[in-house]
Image (cartoon, rainbow, N blue to C red; front, side):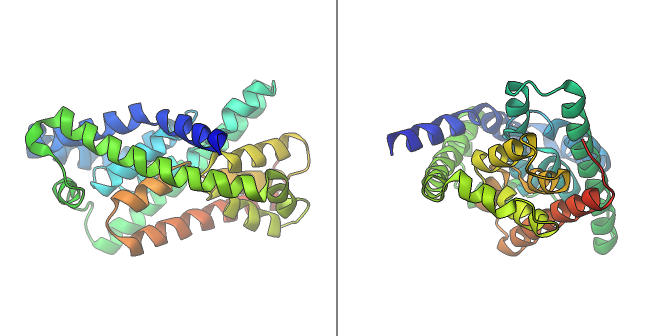
Length: 284
Protein backbone atom coordinates (compact mmCIF):
# COMPACT_ATOMS: atom_id res chain seq x y z
CA UNK A 1 0.00 0.00 0.00
CA UNK A 2 2.84 2.37 0.88
CA UNK A 3 4.57 1.63 -2.43
CA UNK A 4 1.35 2.35 -4.32
CA UNK A 5 0.96 5.72 -2.58
CA UNK A 6 4.62 6.64 -3.09
CA UNK A 7 4.54 5.71 -6.79
CA UNK A 8 1.40 7.78 -7.28
CA UNK A 9 2.88 10.68 -5.33
CA UNK A 10 6.07 10.87 -7.40
CA UNK A 11 4.13 10.49 -10.66
CA UNK A 12 1.99 13.50 -9.68
CA UNK A 13 4.96 15.52 -8.41
CA UNK A 14 6.46 15.37 -11.92
CA UNK A 15 3.42 17.27 -13.18
CA UNK A 16 3.68 20.18 -10.73
CA UNK A 17 5.92 22.41 -12.91
CA UNK A 18 3.63 21.94 -15.92
CA UNK A 19 0.50 22.61 -13.90
CA UNK A 20 1.88 25.69 -12.16
CA UNK A 21 3.24 27.28 -15.35
CA UNK A 22 -0.04 26.58 -17.14
CA UNK A 23 -2.14 28.21 -14.45
CA UNK A 24 0.31 31.10 -14.19
CA UNK A 25 -0.10 31.80 -17.91
CA UNK A 26 -3.88 31.56 -17.64
CA UNK A 27 -3.95 33.91 -14.66
CA UNK A 28 -1.75 36.38 -16.52
CA UNK A 29 -4.02 36.26 -19.57
CA UNK A 30 -7.07 36.92 -17.44
CA UNK A 31 -5.70 39.70 -15.24
CA UNK A 32 -2.79 41.33 -17.05
CA UNK A 33 -2.72 40.70 -20.76
CA UNK A 34 -6.03 42.16 -21.80
CA UNK A 35 -8.18 41.39 -24.82
CA UNK A 36 -5.47 42.01 -27.43
CA UNK A 37 -3.22 39.17 -26.27
CA UNK A 38 -6.18 36.83 -25.84
CA UNK A 39 -7.33 37.59 -29.39
CA UNK A 40 -3.81 37.04 -30.73
CA UNK A 41 -3.60 33.61 -29.08
CA UNK A 42 -6.96 32.56 -30.45
CA UNK A 43 -6.22 33.81 -33.96
CA UNK A 44 -3.06 31.69 -34.01
CA UNK A 45 -5.18 28.68 -33.07
CA UNK A 46 -5.20 27.38 -36.67
CA UNK A 47 -1.51 26.56 -36.23
CA UNK A 48 -2.12 25.06 -32.79
CA UNK A 49 -2.36 21.40 -33.90
CA UNK A 50 1.02 21.66 -35.64
CA UNK A 51 2.76 23.04 -32.56
CA UNK A 52 0.73 20.89 -30.15
CA UNK A 53 1.56 17.61 -31.88
CA UNK A 54 5.28 18.38 -31.58
CA UNK A 55 5.12 19.49 -27.93
CA UNK A 56 3.02 16.47 -27.00
CA UNK A 57 5.76 14.13 -28.23
CA UNK A 58 8.05 15.13 -25.37
CA UNK A 59 8.42 12.47 -22.61
CA UNK A 60 5.88 12.19 -19.79
CA UNK A 61 2.34 13.56 -19.85
CA UNK A 62 2.84 17.08 -18.56
CA UNK A 63 1.84 18.69 -21.83
CA UNK A 64 -1.43 16.73 -21.97
CA UNK A 65 -2.29 17.96 -18.47
CA UNK A 66 -1.44 21.52 -19.49
CA UNK A 67 -3.49 21.16 -22.69
CA UNK A 68 -6.57 20.08 -20.74
CA UNK A 69 -6.40 23.22 -18.63
CA UNK A 70 -5.80 25.46 -21.63
CA UNK A 71 -8.69 23.90 -23.53
CA UNK A 72 -11.04 24.29 -20.56
CA UNK A 73 -10.24 28.02 -20.70
CA UNK A 74 -10.63 27.95 -24.51
CA UNK A 75 -7.12 29.27 -24.97
CA UNK A 76 -6.41 26.43 -27.40
CA UNK A 77 -8.74 24.75 -29.86
CA UNK A 78 -10.17 21.25 -29.65
CA UNK A 79 -7.94 20.29 -32.57
CA UNK A 80 -4.86 21.36 -30.64
CA UNK A 81 -6.08 19.37 -27.64
CA UNK A 82 -6.39 16.22 -29.76
CA UNK A 83 -3.03 16.83 -31.45
CA UNK A 84 -1.37 16.85 -28.02
CA UNK A 85 -3.35 13.88 -26.70
CA UNK A 86 -2.57 11.73 -29.74
CA UNK A 87 1.16 12.54 -29.83
CA UNK A 88 1.66 12.04 -26.09
CA UNK A 89 3.34 8.72 -25.29
CA UNK A 90 3.58 8.82 -21.48
CA UNK A 91 6.27 6.24 -20.55
CA UNK A 92 6.97 4.92 -24.05
CA UNK A 93 10.10 6.95 -24.74
CA UNK A 94 11.86 6.35 -21.39
CA UNK A 95 11.20 2.62 -21.67
CA UNK A 96 12.51 2.40 -25.22
CA UNK A 97 15.63 4.32 -24.31
CA UNK A 98 16.22 2.09 -21.27
CA UNK A 99 15.82 -0.99 -23.50
CA UNK A 100 18.50 0.35 -25.87
CA UNK A 101 16.07 0.61 -28.77
CA UNK A 102 17.61 2.12 -31.88
CA UNK A 103 17.09 5.82 -32.53
CA UNK A 104 15.61 5.06 -35.97
CA UNK A 105 12.77 2.97 -34.52
CA UNK A 106 12.03 5.53 -31.82
CA UNK A 107 11.94 8.40 -34.33
CA UNK A 108 9.65 6.44 -36.66
CA UNK A 109 7.10 5.78 -33.91
CA UNK A 110 7.24 9.32 -32.55
CA UNK A 111 7.09 10.76 -36.07
CA UNK A 112 4.04 8.65 -36.86
CA UNK A 113 2.27 9.81 -33.71
CA UNK A 114 3.11 13.45 -34.48
CA UNK A 115 1.76 13.18 -38.03
CA UNK A 116 -1.44 11.45 -36.91
CA UNK A 117 -1.97 13.99 -34.13
CA UNK A 118 -1.29 16.91 -36.46
CA UNK A 119 -3.60 15.63 -39.21
CA UNK A 120 -6.41 14.77 -36.80
CA UNK A 121 -6.10 18.11 -35.00
CA UNK A 122 -6.22 20.16 -38.19
CA UNK A 123 -9.20 18.17 -39.48
CA UNK A 124 -11.10 18.53 -36.20
CA UNK A 125 -10.59 22.30 -36.17
CA UNK A 126 -11.81 22.61 -39.77
CA UNK A 127 -14.93 20.55 -39.06
CA UNK A 128 -15.74 22.39 -35.83
CA UNK A 129 -15.21 25.83 -37.37
CA UNK A 130 -17.64 24.94 -40.14
CA UNK A 131 -20.20 23.54 -37.74
CA UNK A 132 -20.03 26.64 -35.59
CA UNK A 133 -19.86 28.89 -38.66
CA UNK A 134 -17.06 30.81 -37.00
CA UNK A 135 -13.36 30.36 -36.49
CA UNK A 136 -13.27 30.30 -32.69
CA UNK A 137 -15.11 30.11 -29.43
CA UNK A 138 -15.06 32.75 -26.72
CA UNK A 139 -12.53 32.44 -23.93
CA UNK A 140 -13.89 30.94 -20.75
CA UNK A 141 -11.02 31.64 -18.37
CA UNK A 142 -13.24 33.83 -16.20
CA UNK A 143 -15.95 31.17 -16.05
CA UNK A 144 -13.40 28.48 -15.26
CA UNK A 145 -11.98 30.69 -12.53
CA UNK A 146 -15.41 31.09 -10.91
CA UNK A 147 -16.16 27.36 -11.15
CA UNK A 148 -12.99 26.40 -9.26
CA UNK A 149 -13.15 29.08 -6.56
CA UNK A 150 -10.17 31.14 -7.68
CA UNK A 151 -8.35 33.30 -5.12
CA UNK A 152 -7.72 35.98 -7.73
CA UNK A 153 -7.57 38.81 -5.24
CA UNK A 154 -4.38 37.29 -3.80
CA UNK A 155 -2.43 37.85 -7.01
CA UNK A 156 -1.64 35.66 -10.00
CA UNK A 157 1.12 33.63 -8.28
CA UNK A 158 -0.97 32.66 -5.26
CA UNK A 159 -4.00 32.00 -7.43
CA UNK A 160 -1.98 29.80 -9.79
CA UNK A 161 -0.49 27.94 -6.81
CA UNK A 162 -3.98 27.38 -5.38
CA UNK A 163 -5.21 25.88 -8.67
CA UNK A 164 -2.07 23.76 -8.97
CA UNK A 165 -2.39 22.24 -5.49
CA UNK A 166 -6.10 21.61 -5.97
CA UNK A 167 -5.51 19.62 -9.16
CA UNK A 168 -2.43 17.91 -7.66
CA UNK A 169 -4.39 16.40 -4.75
CA UNK A 170 -7.22 15.40 -7.08
CA UNK A 171 -4.77 13.60 -9.38
CA UNK A 172 -3.02 12.00 -6.41
CA UNK A 173 -6.24 10.48 -5.06
CA UNK A 174 -7.35 9.15 -8.44
CA UNK A 175 -3.86 7.86 -9.33
CA UNK A 176 -3.62 5.97 -6.04
CA UNK A 177 -6.98 4.35 -6.80
CA UNK A 178 -5.86 3.37 -10.32
CA UNK A 179 -2.55 2.00 -9.05
CA UNK A 180 -4.41 -0.19 -6.57
CA UNK A 181 -6.69 -1.52 -9.31
CA UNK A 182 -3.77 -2.18 -11.69
CA UNK A 183 -1.90 -3.91 -8.86
CA UNK A 184 -4.88 -6.12 -8.11
CA UNK A 185 -5.53 -7.05 -11.75
CA UNK A 186 -1.88 -7.43 -12.72
CA UNK A 187 0.00 -6.28 -15.80
CA UNK A 188 0.15 -9.87 -17.09
CA UNK A 189 -3.63 -9.96 -17.26
CA UNK A 190 -3.69 -6.71 -19.25
CA UNK A 191 -1.09 -8.18 -21.59
CA UNK A 192 -3.11 -11.36 -22.17
CA UNK A 193 -6.10 -9.34 -23.36
CA UNK A 194 -4.38 -8.06 -26.50
CA UNK A 195 -2.04 -10.87 -27.55
CA UNK A 196 -2.44 -12.14 -31.14
CA UNK A 197 -5.93 -10.71 -31.68
CA UNK A 198 -6.27 -8.89 -35.04
CA UNK A 199 -8.68 -5.89 -34.90
CA UNK A 200 -9.81 -7.03 -31.48
CA UNK A 201 -6.26 -6.38 -30.36
CA UNK A 202 -6.49 -2.77 -31.55
CA UNK A 203 -9.87 -2.34 -29.84
CA UNK A 204 -8.61 -3.68 -26.52
CA UNK A 205 -5.24 -1.92 -26.74
CA UNK A 206 -7.04 1.38 -27.35
CA UNK A 207 -9.21 0.82 -24.29
CA UNK A 208 -6.16 0.00 -22.17
CA UNK A 209 -4.44 3.10 -23.51
CA UNK A 210 -7.25 5.25 -22.15
CA UNK A 211 -6.39 4.16 -18.61
CA UNK A 212 -4.77 7.27 -17.06
CA UNK A 213 -1.92 5.33 -15.54
CA UNK A 214 1.66 4.75 -16.68
CA UNK A 215 1.15 0.97 -16.41
CA UNK A 216 -0.87 1.05 -19.63
CA UNK A 217 1.90 2.55 -21.76
CA UNK A 218 4.48 0.38 -20.00
CA UNK A 219 2.63 -2.85 -20.83
CA UNK A 220 1.92 -1.84 -24.43
CA UNK A 221 5.49 -0.72 -25.10
CA UNK A 222 7.13 -3.76 -23.52
CA UNK A 223 4.84 -6.19 -25.36
CA UNK A 224 5.69 -4.56 -28.66
CA UNK A 225 9.42 -4.66 -27.95
CA UNK A 226 9.13 -8.34 -27.01
CA UNK A 227 7.54 -9.08 -30.40
CA UNK A 228 4.19 -10.26 -29.05
CA UNK A 229 2.20 -7.16 -30.00
CA UNK A 230 1.62 -5.90 -33.54
CA UNK A 231 2.52 -2.40 -34.67
CA UNK A 232 -1.15 -1.59 -35.17
CA UNK A 233 -2.20 -2.62 -31.67
CA UNK A 234 0.78 -0.83 -30.18
CA UNK A 235 -0.11 2.40 -31.99
CA UNK A 236 -3.79 2.11 -30.99
CA UNK A 237 -2.86 1.94 -27.33
CA UNK A 238 -0.26 4.69 -27.45
CA UNK A 239 -2.44 7.04 -29.53
CA UNK A 240 -5.45 6.66 -27.24
CA UNK A 241 -3.26 7.12 -24.17
CA UNK A 242 -2.94 10.72 -23.02
CA UNK A 243 -1.46 10.19 -19.58
CA UNK A 244 -3.40 12.14 -16.97
CA UNK A 245 -4.72 14.57 -19.57
CA UNK A 246 -8.19 13.02 -19.49
CA UNK A 247 -8.29 13.12 -15.68
CA UNK A 248 -7.46 16.82 -15.68
CA UNK A 249 -10.04 17.48 -18.40
CA UNK A 250 -12.77 15.78 -16.37
CA UNK A 251 -11.87 17.96 -13.41
CA UNK A 252 -11.55 21.37 -15.06
CA UNK A 253 -13.85 21.28 -18.09
CA UNK A 254 -17.38 21.94 -16.87
CA UNK A 255 -19.13 20.09 -19.69
CA UNK A 256 -19.61 16.35 -19.04
CA UNK A 257 -21.18 15.67 -22.46
CA UNK A 258 -18.30 17.32 -24.27
CA UNK A 259 -15.79 15.42 -22.13
CA UNK A 260 -17.49 12.13 -23.01
CA UNK A 261 -17.40 12.97 -26.72
CA UNK A 262 -13.70 13.87 -26.53
CA UNK A 263 -12.87 10.56 -24.84
CA UNK A 264 -14.90 8.53 -27.34
CA UNK A 265 -13.37 10.34 -30.31
CA UNK A 266 -9.87 9.91 -28.90
CA UNK A 267 -10.49 6.18 -28.57
CA UNK A 268 -11.98 5.93 -32.06
CA UNK A 269 -9.07 7.79 -33.67
CA UNK A 270 -6.52 5.61 -31.90
CA UNK A 271 -8.23 2.36 -32.88
CA UNK A 272 -8.87 3.40 -36.49
CA UNK A 273 -5.26 4.51 -36.94
CA UNK A 274 -4.03 1.22 -35.49
CA UNK A 275 -6.28 -0.86 -37.74
CA UNK A 276 -5.16 1.15 -40.78
CA UNK A 277 -1.49 0.70 -39.88
CA UNK A 278 -2.04 -3.05 -39.52
CA UNK A 279 -4.01 -3.30 -42.77
CA UNK A 280 -1.28 -1.47 -44.71
CA UNK A 281 1.35 -3.73 -43.22
CA UNK A 282 3.34 -0.83 -41.80
CA UNK A 283 6.15 -1.96 -39.55
CA UNK A 284 8.46 0.08 -37.34
